[in-house]
Length: 392
Image: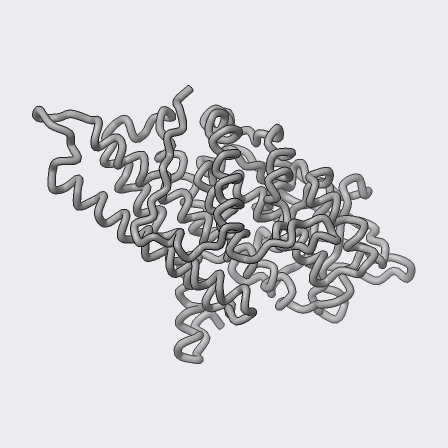
């Protein structure tokens, strides 16, 4: 088992801008990742298994709903702390960060923002502790980038609703205890509802044969005349804006998380380049390798400050969906490019499980597509600056 020697790059001394609480939260998460994730994650990815043993640890470090108020079981932290937690977890693995992101931003967040007081008190503390795990059902077989076209429906039967339809590419689905599902009512209005495992007609088949996010559990949500009690509807917001607001929170976490993956690839490549001898000297002494490494640290540094500023705007309530789209698109693209360059620095060794780079690269191929594809996020920025929607 390789020792985790990761050292985080901070080329422009961003730490000087962080509070002591921010640094404590980050260090606690970093140490947990070194202790509990990196020793097991390569084997989990090779076996295509989600390591359920880490769920309690994720809860203990506050990775589930860190910004949810303490009265509902969260840690009551700010948005920069949330981002730093996601950064450190994705430094370990994108799939593990996906599990934490989904639980926080796509399950706990909608219950907290749109749920009734009874729903908050019933579910949030158990979700924060990891006693319950959740997933988020928006994407459908025929509707990815256009979620407004969803075909999943709820029908009012009087004392309950009947839910029919299907969702796919759902992280956590195979083991989730509850699902936050978005469906259209008979008037075509999108509603959020809580679906519990065990409801008759509800199944969650697992998705197999993935080359990416292999240590993450992905599946489908199938609804065949599932009876939904009326008090399982999220009462305080409906329409497409509700799930998109959840995705804003998740995309924000991804923007931070991608930096973690990039930092791990850079740190691995830098260390390897100093140790690998060719032509009688370390390959770090050659210009082309220095070019790769210098460009990596430049792009990481730019992403760190873009995302730190976004965190400040989130704390102030001033960050827009377009701001978040820019950071998600930029940072994941940056991380994927760094993973590819770092793999080249390691040569053939870069494709082996002895190093994390190839796993990060494969994971990031999913991250660049989910929760808004690379192209759609560009069009969101284009719409924001021109006022003309290119996707309608």
